[in-house]
Each structure stands twice: as C-alpha cells, then as structure tokens.
Length: 361
Image (cartoon, rainbow, N blue to C red):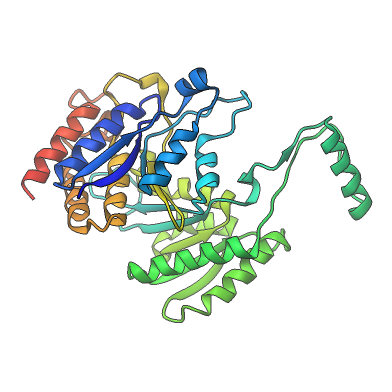
C-alpha cells in the first residue's frame, strides 16, 4: 500500500524543491499517495490566512506531512504558519540532525549532532501584549503590585513559560531517540543560573527524567557556554535537548558547523503526527529560477522514510545524497567552491543526478 502523505509545497522556491524531492523519494521505489495542500502568502491573499484549515485536516488524515518553506509576512499581523502548525497538531518535538558529509565546506569534520527542541512553550508560544492596550495596562499593574518592579509603559511584553509536563515529554523524547538510535549521551541546555524559576524547572525536570535512563550518559550545560563549546569542541556532544528559544538558536548554529542551512533537514513530531521540512527560508527572489539547493528537503525526506519504517530506502537515498555531495559535480551554486562556478547545476538537475545514482545502489 502506498504511504499517504500530505504534501505542502509552500511558496517562494518551495514548489521547486518539493517537486525535486518528491521525484527522488519516488525513485527509491517506495510508493506514496500525495495529498497536495497549499499554504503561504498566496493563500493569505486568497483566503486571509497563510495556513488554511484544510491543511491541518489533511495532516490529521494522513498522519505525515512533507512541507516546503513558507513565507511569514513581516509586520502584517500574521502568526507564523510553522508555529501555528506545531501548536494545532501538538508537534512538540523539533528534531534537527547536524551531520558533516564529505564535499561540504566546513571548518569541522566528523560532527554528528542531534538537536531536540521543545516546540510548544517558552517565548515562542506567542503570548504577547501590545503597549497601550487595556490588557497590557492590567498586566503592568499586576506586575508592579506583586513584584514591586515598575516596567516602562512604553514597552511591549512577551511571556515565557515552561511547564513540567512539556519539559518531561521533550526530555523523554530525547532519551528515547538516543536509545533507539544507539546514541551515547544527552545534554540538557538551559539558563537556570539567571532564570532560576522557568529554566530552573526545565533543568530539575530533566534531571529527574535522566534517572530513568541509566544506560545513557547525561549532563547539562548553560546555553551561552554551550555555544562556545560547540564552536570549540563539538565532537564532545551527541544529543542536545533544549527549550524552544535556545533550541532555535542552537540548531542554526549547528547547521553552520556542517556547511549551512542548505543541507539541514528538520522534523516536527508529536504523539500522533509528524511533519518533515527543510529549515531554510523560502527565498522568494529565486522563485522559478531552478537555482536553489533542494538537498535540505531531500535529507528531510530521508528522515520521513525512516519515520515510515522504510529504512532500506532511507539508507539508499542518504547514500546517494552523500555520494553526490562528495563528488561535487551535480550540485547547486551554494555548494561549489565559488558561487559563480559555471559548472553549478539547477534544482531539477540535482534531482536527476540523485535519481541516476539511486539506480546504481
């Protein structure tokens, strides 16, 4: 039976890289039944939202989504489609592998990190108060009365909250992932030395969960020190588990260690649904030019195949991508030594090369 998958091409360069990715996924021999759904700036113009309800309903039916990048209009009052998708489907775990491959330009070798980011709470929950509103004035009065701290009324405010329940399940997710994938260590990342209550709760809960996994090493690091450690000696780390904001920052830092967002896959996973996507933006200025690198979405497809328990196909596709990268011939301009290299190929041609390689594996 074919796997039912919701396909969200996205906007900007999303449709091009989604088409290339679908072709290579189908070339593995795995069968798919794609349910195409539109989201992004075009749907905003037509339907007044970047994420129509039918997209959510489709993923609830198929349980799995493959998504291209979606543009979030800046300053238009529209909440990020990515954040909304995670909240409505309770995709509480953001999974971001960061692995070096031969052929990528990087200052490092043999990096193999996995970032596990809590997706639903923290500052990214979107609980904000605009200055001058009655709700904001009420909040200012409450803070002043209960803490004695007088906040400048000409401010905006975002609320950070971290719960035991959400922390416990994301830390358990990290440990279960480590155990299932034979990883050696989990590191909890926090700022509990300053935010003693919110991050302190995250840290104490992580400590408690770690006791349930005596077969896996456990440690914790303060987030600013973690950034330095990753730059100086990333080989010491394996699986990192973090609250939402720190996870967003550290995952992009880790992508920079391996060669950039062009090869950085991602997944958002909950108890019932999973959505796989590249983590780079939609790059609308390159839309329709057959120019952008599709490999981040293709590596996300590898993650999706493993989620679907199509491990042999996932391993073949990852091997094909690794070989194309190592050869350095059929790659886009951003993976060449110079961006003006005339031998760079287009998005579609990368897919052609990967498909040809799959036939030989």
